[in-house]
Image (cartoon, rainbow, N blue to C red; front, side):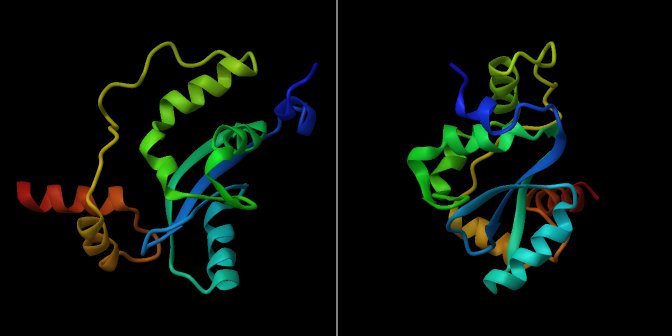
Length: 152
């Protein structure tokens, strides 16, 4: 018997999977697009919200989106929108490696070095950072800017 992920899309087409959220916090959208920035601009217009990109999985199997939706089904609010609690269980490398194992793709041999890390940030601190962000910024970009400014 085929899984829902296999039934929905049995091809190996590649796309970008993104997570977006309002800069004020709240629900997270898990979607896919070949042009993530363009899609986020459309979502901003549709929802009249200032959205930010939390994470983008570039050039991944298109079935990954459905797999993520299934993984976080208990946190689904409506459609492709999920409770922000999914972030507490979100390690991009581990999640993608689990998906790859599920569909029989070989994951990277090892987790990347500590070039990227998962951090937790308190909501007031996140809100202060988000208030200073521009369209192309992410929280990670803003943190990098702060760290570079401290080192100068």
